[in-house]
Length: 483
Image (cartoon, rainbow, N blue to C red; front, side, top):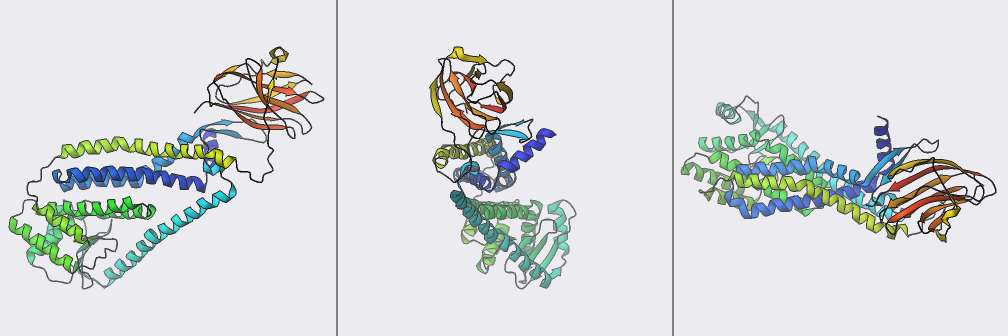
């Protein structure tokens, strides 16, 4: 439980708004690739797949984009970056955190941070403008429509409802002079709205059947999920292409369900009904599932779909595609998250070279040649090959002490966090087998410095007391392996 507490504290301490912006970018990259793969698949194989299967396949992608991808991207981003957490027995520090990559959240100087703050502000305004405001506006319109619409009861609707839904589910039926096209609204409390126009008996049953299939397949819930995705990724044109295509496929799947087993006369009547209603349709969906789809190109697509009498049902083809994309989705999310982290890490030197006003001491690194015989090897402290090791030892005046030599790969990092009294002066650094060393001198009795291994080989960490009295050194070493 203590480590979980440290992990939560580290997450709060070392993450922030900039990480959120970067995660959104990673999610957009991953979602764009997934959408592109799905659209390419249907571009080549749409005519060979029944729309009912296609609609289910696209609903699976919606669930992945809306629920799985955001959480998985957050998990990957932090799991790939956090190396580990080491509890410390210190009055000043409770734990130490290791990272694989430098991130903008930790390295960007103040002025550059405002760029991300501005971008996030623009993104939040876009979410409000494209998602929040339309949601409440449409809800207000639909609530007003429900208030002034006439609730009707039709025994034929109730009978068909039990037949299509295969259960007793109360669905309210309304008629309004303000409605030009039948539509479905609601997830739990479903309501179907009809125009005031008097339809022939067969036409009315076809409309009922179409909207009830939407109810059975929970299409409204998936449309709302798509609206959420459009709000979050409002700047990504791919999500609008996917929404448009899903709506088309979803309507065609309902058309197939209504016309299955019906005569050619019924099919002609249904096609004429869709065309007639679409002519007088206003084109405004109000967040509902419309009978016509509110789109002329969608109407053309639906009518053309009804003509494909010999469409072959190939669920195996769709199953293979679904399995392929299912296996690719985690890899795509992994690639997007890792790629974003590596871009930040490669950009880090540029931002870290920018001088920013700071009270933190700057340690200048020196190169020296030492005689190994002059060193005393430290025996009572064993350094961990990875992670942190607590240091507490006494170094006599003018003496040099080293830890046992260890093998490091090129690119590994050695972090030294050592403290003494304010008046203590000492050096610390890394030394190879030939005595060549890189070291820094203490400032105000402290050394907080990182060394990156330039060439694979054996190295030893050492300390040297340059003061006038025995120095008691305390602190930690933190060893990070090569990435």
